[in-house]
View 1 (spheres, rainbow, N blue to C red):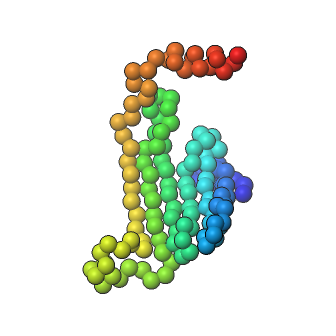
View 2 (tube, rainbow, N blue to C red):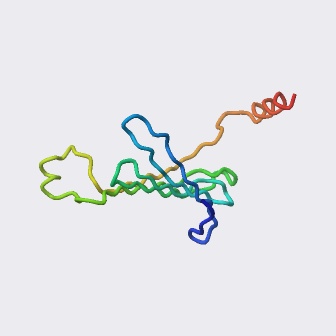
Length: 128
């Protein structure tokens, strides 16, 4: 769809559309890709009519050169009828209409016990 600036960083905004299936309409999602680091930093989707999911991903550099997710924060929203106290008490197993969650990633180990030669040999055979 073009470019967008988010937190002072240029991003490419992409629109994804699912294929419609019998009884299920096509759904669209949007993703924002950091134009410098080529990683997805934000996702917005409407999986079911009236519901919205948005995800933000922050990254960290591991061992000075590998970019990996550091945290992911997801927000779930429902445009109509927010959860009432009665619904939470009498239907505790029902999926909430609103909420959020955050995941933190840590203790990355990259290629532990693997020799660099494994990857060099693959490159050599691909060239032939």
